[in-house]
Image (cartoon, rainbow, N blue to C red; front, side, top):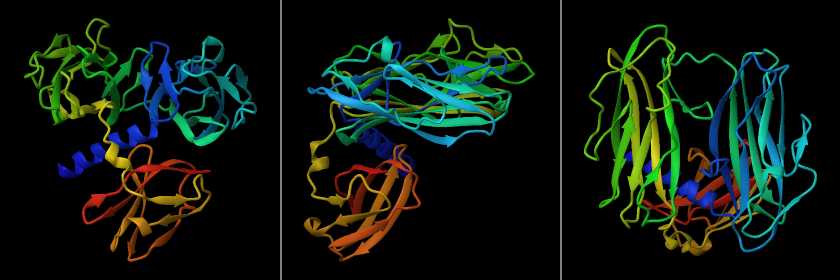
Amino acid sequence: MKKTLLFYALFLQATFLLGQGSLQLFSDEGVEFANGQQHHVFVDFAEWETVSPELFVKNISANDISVKIRVEQISLPENTSTYFCGLGSCFAPGTMETPEPFLIPAGEQIGNAGVFTSHYQPGEVLGNAIMRYTYFDVDNLNDTISVTYTFVGSPSSAPIQLFDHHNIEVVNGDFIELPVTDLSAFEIVSPELFVKNNTDQVMSLRCRKEVIEEVSGSVNYFCALGVCLPPTGDETTKEYVLGAGEMAIPGEPFTSHYTPNEQNGNTIIRYKYFNIANENDSLSFTVAFSDITGIDDDLNSSVLMVYPNPANDFIKVNLQELNLNDGRIEIYNALGTLSFEQNFRGESEVTLDLSQLPRGVYLYRVESQGGYTATSKLILK
């Protein structure tokens, strides 16, 4: 359990640090996308093209900034094609970076003319296309925000599926972060999610709640399978029957509800849909209500110099000001996964070979005697 809590704490910290730049992303309904967020879009082979939901970028800084979009092709099945639209234009397949910067005035969100969409043409080929798109400030390459789309073109075998109203799937193990920007808010509600029976048999379902971390004095509850449970409720009791291939009706979605009651901290809850007749047929996901108002300024109190940043393959970590005898340097990707580590013992400066890591945004920090230095961004280009 301790390892699990440490992972989620790191994940939240990573999201905070990677999302403190000048740029934010929003859906067409105003729901904010966390930096590094992943989305699944299901491919309809009856259609020539599958298009992602629209995204709008906003400049939350006090200065005008010029931005571009960079593309990273993580996976693309042979004989398929993908392209994207954004910053006022649509770009041909193979375009890996928008050629011209786009000015976004201070405090403004890009309008419909500059909306972002990712487009996938499957050509009746099975397989998943995975594309990462990164907005970045051309004058400050450390100022970035990314989103990853997986166009799911292979039939899913999961017995229980969960979708939002854009038909984007929440897959088993997914992590949904909901920023808490106002501790006086009456209630913060997750997007609606709809469960589906993906088998050829009738299925009876229940939904269970497991609190991983909870802010003292806050309140949380959830609605699922046609009922809303009180804050003390941790499992639906009524059997919810879905026919073969059937999805829950629109009036009975899943929602997670949170009231901070002026209390700082993060509340993390795991939810599990399961087949009453066979609990191995299940789907779990985690919702984190992340307090971005209470980030500890002490995170930046330690002096840690890493250069060059952005870097290509090698970086140097200057440890002289930390006065540490020995410890470990850790590098995590934007999803909070440990990607690289290297021990040190008494050195004032350490060189790290990161040539095997994919290009992108990472976090670095130093562990020593059970404590950590400040966590900061590293860009590999």
